[in-house]
Length: 223
Ligand code: DX5
Ligand code: ZN
Image (tube, rainbow, N blue to C red; front, side):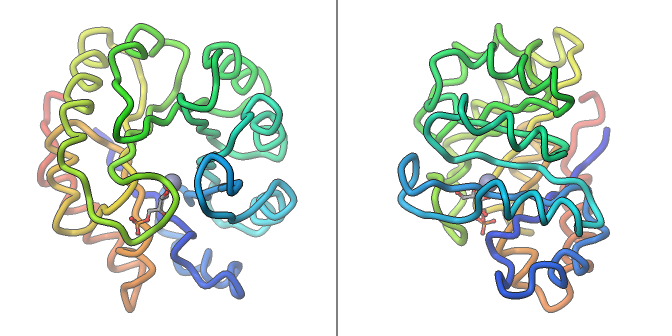
């Protein structure tokens, strides 16, 4: 089973993003947190900025949209060449239509669930998605503590993926560190977003390798 480490540039130096991207070139994807100050009480990057990051990044972009009205904005991120575009379940009434649109454009489609959002209604929609992002903190800010109470959702997702044989990546985001990544891997996650854990390290590339090892050590081989 493949373990993916996606550093979040939310924890990077915003004045030196091209340089920061170079420091995480050994990662699988770069996680880009788009926040609109409405869906979450914080504001980050928009389409123009993400398009430019796409041009200079050594690795593909994993865009996480924490925004209202994803129908209006998400397709633009797919058109700019993002590898994956993930929108929030809580922000849309027709997740399937939006996922189909993203796939049509050529991006992988992801759906994100806040800690308080139940996973059950989405299990039957899994064939429509390439990835499910289980938030392990309340979205909006980096550097928060991992919420272990979200792990039963990963268990449910991992069993459904196993039973159906679907190729859906299971992503966790928030508070992932050397201390917590094993818990999430054990529960069935295979794609790990880490902001402060990676950019807070003296040598991000070394931390990426350590996180990868820690996750793999806890991964069930039958998954
Ligand atoms: C939070 C963002 C995360 C954030 C994670 O709303 O979605 O991607 O960057 O940061 P850490 O790893 O520091 O919790
Ligand atoms: Zn994120």
